[in-house]
Image 1 (tube, one colour):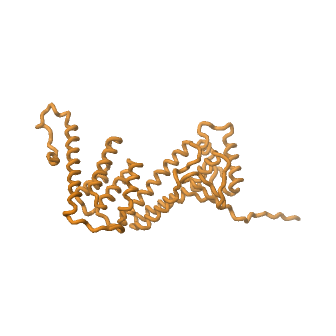
Image 2: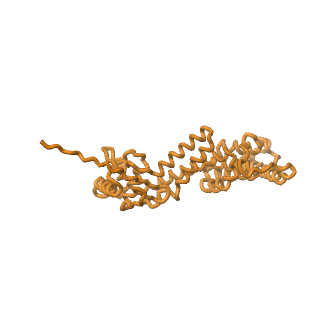
Image 3: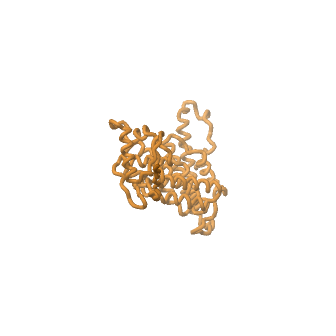
Length: 323
């Protein structure tokens, strides 16, 4: 009677790292690795962002080929999986009746998303310093535009857009933490660039207004609101949301609630009143300009009532204040 011995492979599994936050890059045990073609790059990237969840073969066919499907698409997917396993390790991709899933891989996208979740939680719990550090770590993973070097497919474009919006989410978390830590001076220039790149993200406008106000630049904060108002009204046909309007009113009223904590670095003593006349004059000029603008809008809105006489028109509360 003979006995058979089952051989077990005790060799350590290869360390697979996939980087998508920039140019697509793959390493195995720390060494750069080429997958052997754009379709395999796309297949590996698609599996990499699914957190180990299987992707059905039909979904892979749709995402990789779109309408240009090969004659035997399921065979084509299997062929690419076999070639990827040969390059990355047999255990790198697991198959099931539900499709294929990536195993044993570190992906910068997933690390970034986890750090962002942790940063949000820390900020929600009042730990601004930890939140700032986590958001900074998340942003440091970016090396350029996401998914560069991958085939230009609908899935790649949609995923790149999604990741770019998450990058701005991480920026907002870092800016919010900086405001809570009194580091408003350090983020003004970054915020100005951010609102130029994403002018419809109201939270960035809010953060820029607060940072400028806390730097003693109330006039610039009011001008920032005017810019946000123009962007929203002229390009979206909508006025800014209630939070942005609230901050605007708080700045006009010099509400102590938005003063924030004192700057932690580059702190300066407040100027005597007589030395702040220039700034106060700029604020008053800006208020007059806002009121004149409001009166112009009111006159345009009431243009249809010209034939019924001025007595029928209500007098706005701000009438005459701009004089």
